[in-house]
Image (tube, rainbow, N blue to C red; front, side, top):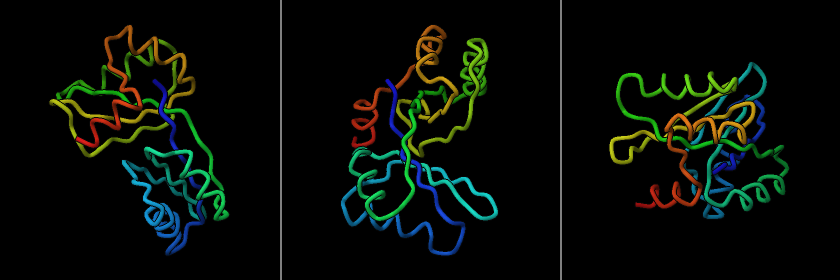
Length: 146
């Protein structure tokens, strides 16, 4: 149920984003979704890719500081209150949302959203109990390829 996210630590300067993206592109690694967070001097490029082990090896081999994080891909009803229901389920389980970002595609009227929480393993049963669908990595790849 948990999905691996690849995070690349970058200097915040012109051109810093193109190098890791070009490296992955040249190796045939497709970025399925991403988020970028920055500070004045540094940035975090968060990526979801099908071949995360390959991406980590390539990026680390090229000298980038890289780490992986367990995140959850959740289906979210595309209606008012859809996001609020997910937050309520996590709050009820005393889980903290660290960050979130969305895919640009929808599946059968539902959005796909990445969630990072302080305890992903504990989030799985709490979300299931609340009727929230967690998309397994293989299913996510199948949907994105469709």
